[in-house]
Image (cartoon, rainbow, N blue to C red):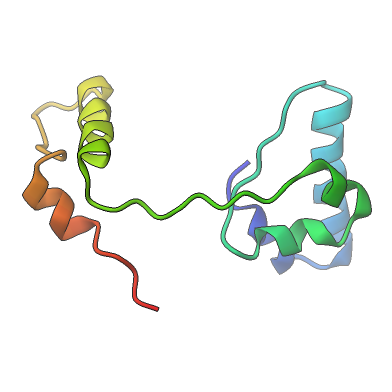
Length: 103
């Protein structure tokens, strides 16, 4: 589930309903649930003891321009139904698009 940090935008009742939905998906449907979001995502789950015990925060490092990144982007380009090749994996494009964040 993407953008779980948006749980914080809702009021208490909306947050409870959303957290209960996540519990339902995991328990009743017996499926694995992965949630992603910004650095606020763990805060969105921290208000519920059951959610804290079910989800372990894991930070994915920011991608940097590299052969691995260019290979990943080239793979996307190969499987996406593009009319024309984008050249997304070219070093010059990757270097201009994947600058490290300031801060």
